[in-house]
Each structure stands twice: as C-alpha cells, then as structure tokens.
Image (cartoon, rainbow, N blue to C red; front, top):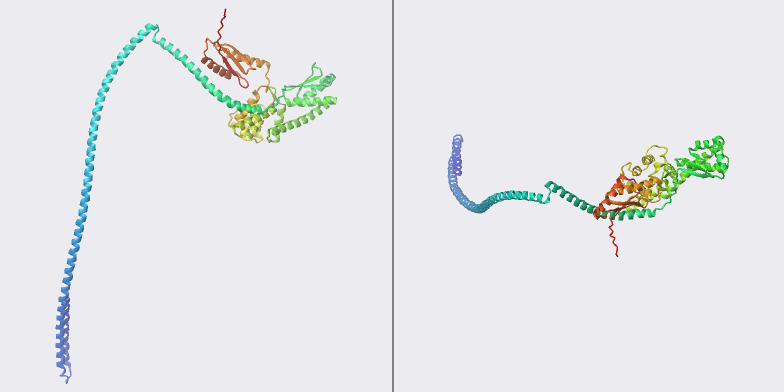
Length: 540
C-alpha cells in the first residue's frame, strides 16, 4: 500500500513539470536562451529525485513488509501459544469436571446399592412378617375353634351345675339372685355406714376444731347483759286512790290517756300497780313516762294528760337519740342522724325477750371478731352487724319483712351496697353476695341461739322436746330416746340385738338429718346413740 502511494506521487510530479517547462520555453523573452539548459537540468534532477524517491520508497516498502510479516509471525506465534495455553487449561478443567462427575456417579451408585440392599432386607422382613401373620391367623382360628368348643362344654357343665345346685339348695336361680342381692345390700349398707362414720368423724373433728376456736373466742370476748322485756309495763302507784284519778269521772281520764298514747291501761285488783299494754315499745315507753309524770304532779285531767304526753314524747325522742349515739359510739361506727334515731328506737324493741339494740351491738361485735379471725374487712362487718335489724325500728309502721325494710332504709340513707346486701340477706330473704353478709348471718344466729339470749314459751319448749323424742323413737332399732340439756342433745338407746355398731353410726347420721329437715330449733342439737349389752348372772 505504501509502495503504490510513492509511485503515484512520482508520476504526478513528473507529469506536472512537463507543461510548466513547455510553457516557459514558449513565452520566454529573447535573450534568455541560456536558461534553457538550466531548466533541462532541473527537469533531469527532478526526474532523478523522483526515481531516487521511488527507489527509497521501494526499499522502505520492503522494510515495512518485512516488519509486518515479522509482526504477523510473532502474532501468529503468540496466538498459537495462547491457544495452546487455553487448550491446556480447558483440558485440565474438563479433566477435573470428569473426575468430579465420576466421583458423584460412584457415590450415587453406592447409595443406590445401599437402597437396593435395604429394600431387599425390607422385602425379606415383610415376607417373614407375612408368614408370621399367616401362622398367627391359623393359630387364632384354631384357638377360636377350641374356645367355642370349650364354651359349649362350659355352658353345658354350668347348666348341669345350676340344675344340681337348684336341686341341692332347694331354690331356683331367681330366688338365689334375690338372696344374693339381699346379702349384697346388707354388706353395702354396712360398708356405707362405716364410710359415713369415718368421714363424719374426720370432718367433724376438723370442723369442730376450727369452728370451736373461732366462735369460742368471739363469744368469750363479747359478754353483754340482757334484760327480758314483754309487751306490758307495770307502773307503781303511790296509793290505791290514784287508780280512781287515773280512771277519772265516767272514765274520761283513762280514755283521753289511751287516745293520746295508743296504749291500753289495765287497772285491776293488783295493789298499787297499773299495767300499760301495747305491742309498740315506743308508745308504751311514752305512756310510762307520761303516767309517772302525772303521778308525781298529782293533777290528772285531760288537759294535763295532753301536756304530759307531749313532754313524754319529747323526752323519749331524746332518749332514743341518746341510745342510738351511745350504741354507735360503743360499736365505733359513724352514722347519719336518721340512722342514729332509727337505731335508738331499737332500745325499746324486743324479740323473744331479747333487747334488739343490745342484740344489734352483740351482732356487730361478733361480726367484727369473726372478720378479724378470717382476715377480712372488720369495719364493714361491724357496721353491717350494727344495722342488720334496723328495719325492726319501723316494722310496726311499714308492711313487709324487717330485713327487706332495713335494706331499703340503708339504701335510702346512702349506705354502700355490701351493707345493704348483708341487711337484706341476714334471714335468707336475699342471696348473700359477700363474705360480710355470710358473717352477719352467722353472728345473728350465734347471738340469738346462745343460751339465755332469748325466751321461749313453756308450751313451745315442751312441744319441741316431745317432737325430738318422737322422731328419735321412729326407728325400729331404737329402744328409748331422751331429750336433755334443754333440747340441745338427744340420747338414743338402741337395741343391741338388732343394731350393730355400724348400724348405730348410720342411725345417728339419719336422725340428725331428719331433725334438720323436720324440726325448727335454735343453735345445734347433738345426737348421741348408745349401744350397750349387759350380761347378768348370779353366783351361788
């Protein structure tokens, strides 16, 4: 390529110089003929330069071609070396890949061989198990057949034995079943009686221990005096002549007094005593205070009676408020003025001879001490105990149960819900929703049921004892029964030839449950069953 360019350049240079020389010769002025040889020489020199240049270009072209061939040869050699290196690397990598694949295939082949061995072992094990199952099935079929045969033989033998037993025993199968059932029933009854006695003994020991400690501590720490009161009040007279003054001319004084107080005045043959009768304790107290004031003054007439009754009402109201404040102070409870007055009215209220204000204080103390023993809120318990019978202050004026009336009063005067619930539930007319309500129930029962707390009429007392003895004698095992300790214990003597020790234990349980279901009584009734055998002989 370089050689071709040099040849083209030389040719163009020569061709371009010929027209220039010819033109110069044609137009040259005369007298310049000496210059033509110089021009010719220049042309020759140019031609020689072109030839030399061509030769140099030819030589240079040969050098370039030689270098190019040398470079090409080196490139070919390097390419061959690179190709040999890459080929060697590729062959080495291919060899490594082939070795890895052969190793992986050998591992796979080994795993397949192991799997084949395991499958073969499992097939052998399955074949053995199948054979073993077949052997077992055959054995079971044989055993089943043998069992069927033995069952048939056994049934035949049992039938023969049953017939033989019926002939020997002289009773049929149904009769024998009935006899066995009776034996089992008697045995179960004895077992049940023993279990009852054991459970009752353990339970009673634990319950008695805990209850005795709590209740004994509470009762021992609370000792209040009771004054038995009735529905009449006796007012002593200075002399018999005052009876006539009380009656007045044509009975006007006594009629005015009864109309103003609502109390019946009984003037009888009892010397120097007038009896005031009323179911309402506050009215009876007003009448007593008014009559005593009239007797002190000696002037008894309708106007004076009216004034005395008015002043007596004021004095009684003051006494009611003082009694309520005193009770609240003793219990350590702060109450509203309305509840203080209602609480003070209980001072003149009795139930079975038990003063209700003293009863409320005792219930408050007992509830507080029981709450302290059990670790609950003692302040709430004593407040609920003090107010539990607040409804009795107005039960002569409002219809309904005193528990529900008291709960309504407590709710009206802003007492919290646990207090209201304890008041409403202390006689079971509402469901106790708190432990405090249950404690108030227990304290109320304990206060009312302990000996000496309440009176009971002689007729009702005798009737209750008679019912206890009659109920205890209702069992055919009982020989005699006695109610002792004011009806708080029943001694039952059983017939030893009919009742065993187990039956005696069950009899005590049954009598106690019957007493709970059929008889109403305060406190507890202990049932003691005695079984005793005596043998008497005479030495001669």
